[in-house]
Image (cartoon, rainbow, N blue to C red):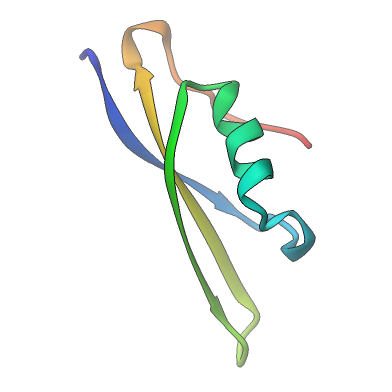
Length: 67
């Protein structure tokens, strides 16, 4: 493994934290923030945010994150 962009899912992230500044803060703990993608389904309250992070996988992966 090496370095490269990886999509990181943030399931269950409260909607008030769906701000690019928050995405950047979260990704700073893993690597370099590149982009984000989110979807929201009002009918079933499914919310998912993904952030694209450039990281070095040789250093290991973050298994969990607390705000």
